[in-house]
Each structure stands twice: as structure tokens, then as C-alpha cells.
Image 1 (spheres, rainbow, N blue to C red):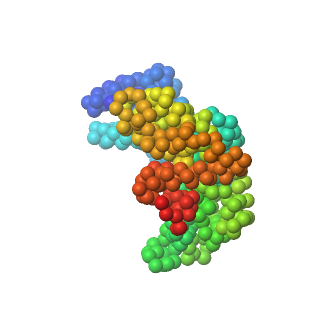
Image 2: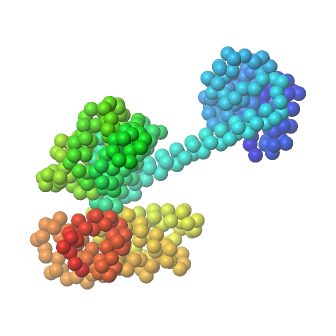
Image 3: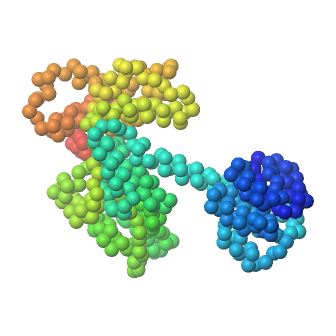
Length: 456
């Protein structure tokens, strides 16, 4: 049932339209006085306004103007006995949904009302979805109260509404894409496309075509012209994830696009202007890649106009309780169940674990615990076995085995490798299960353990 405000200085016409609306199950608000109708707009908050063009004191165009300024989600249909092309064009320019002339057929008005209500419903849904996106990716919703995370929040707040290129670096599972989305949805580009691509997921030739598009006949299988992701993201943002895996040849082409703000499709001879904010991410330090010759230094500085370093979860374990609470609420919302609690011992175990898979691994652990929990409280037995095993090992390990005097980064790498090896043994050598359990990709697992020569 829709609320429909009807305004016409002919009471008989108001009654006819009101009866028609009631027959269709809608709630009419009839007015013969345009002044009274204008005052009632805010109280009624109608989905549809049907208004006569020619009225005393407050005319139909005045009503239309008021609706557009203060009630933009209300569709407006104009009715008049004095139809002209000029009047129709003026009404549509000012934002009217449609225009009907007297005398009209009942079926014609019924169809017009239904179309206008469908249009209004789509507008409201679109507005809701955009608001949901903005709320979902507000940088305040990035979870963490640690000092490192507070610094990141402040930085995002400062740079979100700029067009500067951003490089986000951090281990897999730390939330790099979430930061990228927060940057986009808090910027002036928020109503434009946010396009993502994982550079490690495609071979070089396919990634080039995916990014820049291609012309028909450019290569075998190119049977039609195809626009690339840069063109899809025009006026919006393009998120290049795992850019550290991009080949040197493709890095050169990307650098040219960033410098010239123009791209050329594969097999084409003309350049296409592009207006895209590029946000790149790497799960490995790019400066190390530069030293090894795997990444162009000039591209690095073009991307890292504003660098953001996302800390691994093991370096901000004080955020674990907050993240756990967030994931408990998220699971409850998705499953339609009550929010589960977690007892102190289980939370203590989670706080002692090193989380090599970072926030993503923690989310998977909480989802698993919620699914296995037999009542409203998660206990240690509901946690993944590898989480419990690792925390027990750390608890029992003598201080002598920590080798005091090691560099911190060396110690972390050694402990991480030991834990990954333990998880691999737990999964009886299954690399796929191990990567999934740790919340990392197979490629990352191979890299961390050098699995070309590794045997468990």
C-alpha cells in the first residue's frame, strides 16, 4: 500500500482519483486546496504526488519544485487540461515522473500510477543500498583501538577525498581491500564505480587485456571489442590487489597510464583518456622487490604517493577481543540467530595465538566456533584445534628456547614457519587445507615455506 497525495482544485476530480487509488489498495490523501496540500507534504511523506498544473495561489509547478527540493524520493505525476509540448518538457525538466492530460482513460492513469510507484520504489532501494555501502565501508568501521590502527583511521580521514594514488601494504588477511573500499566510499567518487582486480589471479596476457581492454582481432579469441577495467572504473576507483605479482612488462604499461592519464587497448592505435583513482596493494614489501629487481622503482614511487602500512594481527593482539565481538555480531546477523557469548578461557586462548592468517583467519575461527557451539556460549572446545595447539606450545615453551638476542623480524619468521609446518602436519600434508585454515593463498604458502623443495 502506497501513500498518494492528490491535489486538484476540482473536488470531483480529486474524488475520482482517490477512489481509483483505494481500489488498487493504496492510501489516498485528497486535497482541493494546494496550500493545505503543501503543508501536508512533510506529514504525509508520500511515495507519489498527483498534482494539477493550473491551480490558484500554489500552482502545480510550485508543488513539483517543493517535492524535488524537500522530498526527492516522492515521484510526481502532473495532470492538466491544457496540454502543450512546452508544458510537458518543462515539467519533465523540473523532475516530474510523467504528464497526463484531461480527459484521461482510467486504464491510462492506473498504468501511470503503477509505473511511478515502481520508479519511486527503485529510487528508495538505490538510496538505501548506497547508504548501506557507505555505512559498511566507513573508516570508523575498521575494527581496532590499538595505536597503529588509530593512526590509520586518521590517515584515511585526511586522504580519502583526494585523488592521490595510495599504496596499501600488509600481510594477507590484514584487511587491505577493506581499507581501499573505505577510501573510495568516503571520497567524492563514492557514487562512481569501485573496481577490483587481483593481479596474481591472471597470466600476463590476460591481465593486460583485463586492465586495458582489447580490439577485435588483437589476438586469438578476441572476437569483439572489449573495454578494460580502467574504462569500467572511469571517474571512480580501481583497486589493484597483489600488485607485487605483476610482471615487469606490464608494470611498464601501467606506469605509462598513470603518467599520461591515457590508455591504449591491446591491438588499438588510439589513446583513450582515463580519470581513475588507483589504489594498489601488496602483501610483500615492494622495496624488497625493487632490490631484487622484481619491481620498478619509478612505478613504486608513482603508486606510493601515500603509503599505508597495515600491521599484522600479532602486532596488535589488544584488538582481538574487539574483533571477536564484531565477528560474533556479524555471524548472528547473517545467520539470523542471537549473538553468542564467549567465555574468558576461550578469549584468553585467542589472545595468545599468533594469527599468521591475520584478521581473516580470526573471522574464520569465530565462524567455525559459532557453527559448532551447542549453546549460547563459545568455549575452548569450540575453537579450531590448531589455535589451541599453538597456544599450548607457546605456553609450555621454556624461555631458553626463545633465543633472546634474535632480531624481532627473524624471530617472527621462524615462529611463523614452525607454526605453518605444524599446521601442514595436522592436515596430513594437504597444502590446500593448510592454506584455507591459515587464511592465506596457496601462492603465499609456497613462498613462506619454499615448497618446491619442502617436504613434511
